[in-house]
Length: 214
Image 1 (cartoon, rainbow, N blue to C red):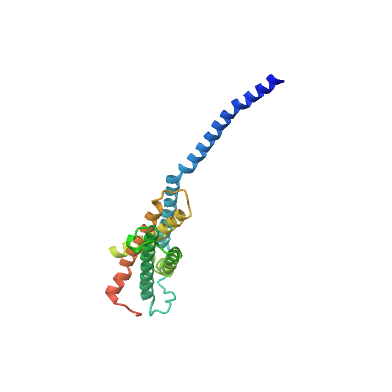
Image 2: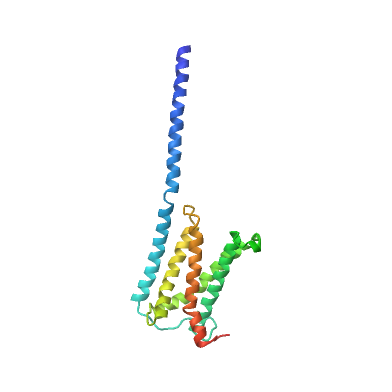
Protein backbone atom coordinates (compact mmCIF):
# COMPACT_ATOMS: atom_id res chain seq x y z
CA UNK A 1 0.00 0.00 0.00
CA UNK A 2 2.75 2.44 0.98
CA UNK A 3 4.79 1.79 -2.19
CA UNK A 4 1.65 2.07 -4.33
CA UNK A 5 0.80 5.44 -2.76
CA UNK A 6 4.33 6.67 -3.31
CA UNK A 7 4.18 5.54 -6.94
CA UNK A 8 0.92 7.38 -7.44
CA UNK A 9 2.46 10.47 -5.87
CA UNK A 10 5.44 10.23 -8.20
CA UNK A 11 3.09 9.75 -11.14
CA UNK A 12 1.18 12.90 -10.26
CA UNK A 13 4.43 14.79 -9.81
CA UNK A 14 5.67 13.64 -13.19
CA UNK A 15 2.42 14.56 -14.90
CA UNK A 16 2.25 18.13 -13.61
CA UNK A 17 5.25 19.53 -15.58
CA UNK A 18 3.78 18.14 -18.78
CA UNK A 19 0.46 19.77 -18.10
CA UNK A 20 2.14 23.05 -17.25
CA UNK A 21 4.15 22.91 -20.47
CA UNK A 22 1.00 22.13 -22.45
CA UNK A 23 -0.81 25.05 -20.82
CA UNK A 24 2.15 27.33 -21.58
CA UNK A 25 2.17 26.22 -25.22
CA UNK A 26 -1.58 26.82 -25.45
CA UNK A 27 -1.26 30.30 -23.94
CA UNK A 28 1.59 31.14 -26.30
CA UNK A 29 -0.42 29.96 -29.29
CA UNK A 30 -3.43 31.98 -28.14
CA UNK A 31 -1.29 35.08 -27.67
CA UNK A 32 0.22 34.58 -31.10
CA UNK A 33 -3.21 34.24 -32.66
CA UNK A 34 -4.20 37.55 -31.09
CA UNK A 35 -1.09 39.52 -32.09
CA UNK A 36 -0.45 38.03 -35.53
CA UNK A 37 -3.53 39.35 -37.36
CA UNK A 38 -3.04 43.02 -36.42
CA UNK A 39 -1.47 44.02 -39.72
CA UNK A 40 -3.77 41.70 -41.64
CA UNK A 41 -6.83 43.17 -39.95
CA UNK A 42 -5.63 46.70 -40.69
CA UNK A 43 -5.12 45.77 -44.33
CA UNK A 44 -8.62 44.29 -44.43
CA UNK A 45 -10.10 47.50 -43.03
CA UNK A 46 -8.22 49.55 -45.62
CA UNK A 47 -9.49 47.27 -48.39
CA UNK A 48 -13.07 47.61 -47.16
CA UNK A 49 -12.70 51.40 -47.19
CA UNK A 50 -11.20 51.21 -50.67
CA UNK A 51 -14.14 49.16 -51.90
CA UNK A 52 -16.55 51.75 -50.48
CA UNK A 53 -14.72 54.53 -52.34
CA UNK A 54 -14.63 52.56 -55.57
CA UNK A 55 -18.33 51.69 -55.25
CA UNK A 56 -19.28 55.33 -54.80
CA UNK A 57 -17.10 56.34 -57.74
CA UNK A 58 -18.58 53.62 -59.93
CA UNK A 59 -22.13 54.61 -59.03
CA UNK A 60 -21.42 58.29 -59.64
CA UNK A 61 -19.85 57.42 -62.99
CA UNK A 62 -22.54 55.01 -64.21
CA UNK A 63 -25.55 56.79 -62.75
CA UNK A 64 -27.24 59.30 -65.05
CA UNK A 65 -27.12 62.65 -63.23
CA UNK A 66 -30.54 64.19 -62.69
CA UNK A 67 -29.32 67.78 -62.64
CA UNK A 68 -32.01 68.59 -60.08
CA UNK A 69 -31.65 70.46 -56.84
CA UNK A 70 -32.46 69.32 -53.32
CA UNK A 71 -33.73 71.08 -50.22
CA UNK A 72 -31.47 74.08 -49.60
CA UNK A 73 -31.96 74.28 -45.80
CA UNK A 74 -32.84 77.97 -45.92
CA UNK A 75 -30.03 79.02 -48.25
CA UNK A 76 -30.84 80.91 -51.46
CA UNK A 77 -29.76 77.95 -53.62
CA UNK A 78 -28.23 74.49 -53.43
CA UNK A 79 -24.67 75.51 -54.26
CA UNK A 80 -24.37 78.03 -51.42
CA UNK A 81 -25.82 75.42 -49.07
CA UNK A 82 -23.21 72.90 -50.17
CA UNK A 83 -20.41 75.43 -49.82
CA UNK A 84 -21.44 76.36 -46.28
CA UNK A 85 -22.17 72.81 -45.15
CA UNK A 86 -18.75 71.69 -46.38
CA UNK A 87 -17.18 74.64 -44.57
CA UNK A 88 -18.95 73.68 -41.35
CA UNK A 89 -17.80 70.09 -41.74
CA UNK A 90 -14.18 71.12 -42.36
CA UNK A 91 -14.10 73.49 -39.37
CA UNK A 92 -15.60 70.85 -37.08
CA UNK A 93 -13.16 68.25 -38.37
CA UNK A 94 -10.21 70.50 -37.59
CA UNK A 95 -11.75 71.06 -34.15
CA UNK A 96 -11.99 67.32 -33.65
CA UNK A 97 -8.35 66.94 -34.63
CA UNK A 98 -7.33 69.55 -32.06
CA UNK A 99 -9.41 67.87 -29.36
CA UNK A 100 -7.77 64.54 -30.20
CA UNK A 101 -4.32 66.09 -29.88
CA UNK A 102 -5.39 67.53 -26.52
CA UNK A 103 -6.63 64.14 -25.29
CA UNK A 104 -3.38 62.46 -26.36
CA UNK A 105 -1.29 65.07 -24.58
CA UNK A 106 0.09 66.57 -27.78
CA UNK A 107 -0.79 70.12 -26.74
CA UNK A 108 1.56 70.69 -23.78
CA UNK A 109 0.63 74.34 -23.41
CA UNK A 110 -3.02 73.39 -22.95
CA UNK A 111 -2.35 71.07 -20.02
CA UNK A 112 -4.43 67.97 -19.33
CA UNK A 113 -7.66 67.63 -21.26
CA UNK A 114 -10.76 68.23 -19.10
CA UNK A 115 -13.42 65.54 -18.80
CA UNK A 116 -15.74 67.23 -21.31
CA UNK A 117 -13.24 67.00 -24.15
CA UNK A 118 -13.85 63.31 -25.09
CA UNK A 119 -17.65 63.81 -25.48
CA UNK A 120 -17.00 67.02 -27.39
CA UNK A 121 -14.55 65.16 -29.62
CA UNK A 122 -17.20 62.60 -30.52
CA UNK A 123 -19.91 65.18 -31.16
CA UNK A 124 -17.63 67.28 -33.35
CA UNK A 125 -16.99 64.26 -35.54
CA UNK A 126 -20.64 63.25 -35.64
CA UNK A 127 -21.92 66.69 -36.65
CA UNK A 128 -19.10 67.09 -39.18
CA UNK A 129 -20.00 63.81 -40.86
CA UNK A 130 -23.73 64.56 -40.87
CA UNK A 131 -23.00 67.94 -42.45
CA UNK A 132 -21.40 66.21 -45.42
CA UNK A 133 -24.36 63.94 -46.21
CA UNK A 134 -26.63 66.45 -48.03
CA UNK A 135 -23.61 67.61 -50.01
CA UNK A 136 -22.58 64.08 -50.99
CA UNK A 137 -26.15 63.13 -51.85
CA UNK A 138 -26.50 66.03 -54.28
CA UNK A 139 -23.09 65.36 -55.79
CA UNK A 140 -23.86 61.70 -56.44
CA UNK A 141 -27.51 62.02 -57.40
CA UNK A 142 -27.62 65.29 -59.33
CA UNK A 143 -24.08 65.76 -60.66
CA UNK A 144 -22.37 62.37 -60.81
CA UNK A 145 -18.64 61.83 -61.22
CA UNK A 146 -17.42 64.81 -63.22
CA UNK A 147 -14.04 65.56 -64.80
CA UNK A 148 -14.68 68.74 -66.76
CA UNK A 149 -11.64 70.43 -65.21
CA UNK A 150 -8.69 69.31 -63.12
CA UNK A 151 -10.26 70.86 -60.02
CA UNK A 152 -13.56 69.08 -60.59
CA UNK A 153 -11.83 65.75 -61.23
CA UNK A 154 -9.73 66.04 -58.08
CA UNK A 155 -12.82 67.03 -56.10
CA UNK A 156 -14.74 64.00 -57.37
CA UNK A 157 -11.92 61.64 -56.43
CA UNK A 158 -11.50 63.21 -52.99
CA UNK A 159 -15.23 63.00 -52.30
CA UNK A 160 -15.29 59.26 -52.98
CA UNK A 161 -12.07 58.70 -51.02
CA UNK A 162 -13.44 60.54 -47.98
CA UNK A 163 -16.24 58.08 -47.31
CA UNK A 164 -13.96 55.10 -47.78
CA UNK A 165 -11.53 56.64 -45.31
CA UNK A 166 -14.40 57.26 -42.91
CA UNK A 167 -15.42 53.58 -43.01
CA UNK A 168 -11.82 52.51 -42.43
CA UNK A 169 -11.48 54.84 -39.46
CA UNK A 170 -14.70 53.58 -37.87
CA UNK A 171 -13.55 49.97 -38.24
CA UNK A 172 -10.19 50.81 -36.67
CA UNK A 173 -11.91 52.71 -33.86
CA UNK A 174 -13.98 49.65 -32.91
CA UNK A 175 -11.06 47.23 -33.06
CA UNK A 176 -8.47 46.42 -30.41
CA UNK A 177 -6.24 44.38 -32.71
CA UNK A 178 -4.62 47.08 -34.82
CA UNK A 179 -1.32 48.94 -34.33
CA UNK A 180 -1.48 51.94 -32.02
CA UNK A 181 -0.51 54.34 -34.82
CA UNK A 182 -3.42 53.26 -37.04
CA UNK A 183 -6.13 55.42 -35.47
CA UNK A 184 -4.14 58.70 -35.46
CA UNK A 185 -3.14 58.13 -39.08
CA UNK A 186 -6.71 57.29 -40.10
CA UNK A 187 -8.15 60.29 -38.25
CA UNK A 188 -5.56 62.70 -39.59
CA UNK A 189 -6.06 61.42 -43.13
CA UNK A 190 -9.80 61.91 -42.81
CA UNK A 191 -9.35 65.53 -41.73
CA UNK A 192 -6.84 66.14 -44.52
CA UNK A 193 -9.26 64.74 -47.10
CA UNK A 194 -12.11 66.92 -45.85
CA UNK A 195 -9.95 70.06 -45.91
CA UNK A 196 -8.86 69.16 -49.46
CA UNK A 197 -12.51 68.69 -50.46
CA UNK A 198 -13.30 72.10 -48.98
CA UNK A 199 -10.42 73.75 -50.86
CA UNK A 200 -11.58 72.30 -54.20
CA UNK A 201 -15.23 73.26 -53.69
CA UNK A 202 -16.18 75.78 -51.00
CA UNK A 203 -13.03 77.86 -51.29
CA UNK A 204 -13.41 77.99 -55.05
CA UNK A 205 -17.08 78.91 -54.69
CA UNK A 206 -16.47 81.70 -52.18
CA UNK A 207 -13.60 83.19 -54.17
CA UNK A 208 -15.66 83.02 -57.37
CA UNK A 209 -19.16 84.00 -56.26
CA UNK A 210 -18.64 85.59 -52.86
CA UNK A 211 -20.66 84.65 -49.79
CA UNK A 212 -24.32 84.31 -50.76
CA UNK A 213 -26.67 83.50 -47.94
CA UNK A 214 -24.77 85.58 -45.36
